[in-house]
Length: 438
Image (cartoon, rainbow, N blue to C red; front, side, top):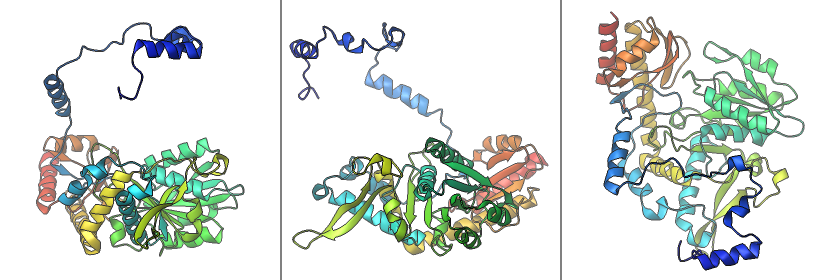
C-alpha cells in the first residue's frame, strides 16, 4: 500500500495542519484518557519465519482429530470428492468477493446461479438466494421474512437444534420480535400443542426435519395446522436427507432453510459454514441477500447478473426485513461442486448409506444395553439411554480414538452415523463398550 498512501513526515504535517490539530494524538482528544494506551502492548518480540512455523505446528498439534466419529448434532462428517478442493482452490474463485461488476464476474455469478438452481431442486422451492452465514442465521432470517405489523410471533419446536433457537432469539430480541417454543412429545413436535399455540399473532412456525433428536417430523400435518391459522411454515432441513425424503415444498413448507455444511464442507473445527435459503415464488421479494439470475447480453449471449440485491445500499433501511450484507460465496461454490460431482443418484446413495449404517449402529448399541429412547422413524441420528455414566463412556471411547455420540444428559446420548462409518468401526466400538462396561 506504500505506493497509494502518503507515508512521509511532510505529508503527515500538511494533513494535520488542514485538520487543525498539531499531532495525531489530538485527533483522539474526545476519547477518555483511561481508554488511551500510553505504553507499548505486552507482546513478545518478533520471531523468524521458521520459528513462527514451528510454534504454529505445536499449537495445531494440540487439536484432537479422531479416526472414528459417531457424533453429529448439526455438523457431520461426509466424504468430500477430491474435485471439490481442486475447483474451490483455484485462485480466480478462491479470492473472488461479491460480484458487483457482472461483466467481469461471470464465472463467480454462474457458480452461484448453479448453486441456487441445485438448492431449489433439493428443496422443491421456486427460488433460492446466494446463501447466508450459516444454518442458524438462515432460520433467523426466515423468521424475519415472515413477520409483519399484524403478526410478530414466531413459534419454534423444542425439537429444533438449541443453538439454532438461541440465534433466532438473538435476532428476534434485536427486532422486538417474540419467540415461543412448542413442546415435544415422544421425540417429535406435539401437534396438539402446536394447534393450540398458533394464533392470530403467529407469523410462522419453525420445525426441523430430521429434528435435533434425529426423528422425522410430520411436516405435512403441521403445515395443514399452520396454514389453517394463516401462518407460514419454515422447514429447517438436512440437505443430505433431502435426497430421499419428500421436499419441503411437497410437505407444504413456505420457506426451506438449513446448514449446508454436509455439502462438501469439512468439519474444520466449526466453520466457516453455509446457510441455504429457498422459498416459494410469492415470498421472493422478502428473501434476504442476493439472487443471481440468467439473461442474455446485447449480442444474445448467455449472461449472469445480480437480479435481486436486498441490502442496505440498495433499499431503504427502515423498509428492509434484513440488513445481511454478504453471502458465503466460496462455501456455496464448494456446495455446488459437491452436488454436481455427486449428482442426483450419488446423493441418494449417500443418504441411503446414512440410513442403513445408522440403523445398524442402533441395533448393535441396543445389544450392548443402549436402548433407543424414541420409537419414531429416524434418518442418521437417534437418542439412546445409557445404562452407565455417559461422560465415562465418552472417555473410554476417546481413549480408543473414537469420538462417541453427544451427551445430552448423564444417561442419554445422541448418536450419528454417515456413509463414512464402516461396519468394522461400529462392531469395534460396541465390542469395546461391552468389554469395558461389562
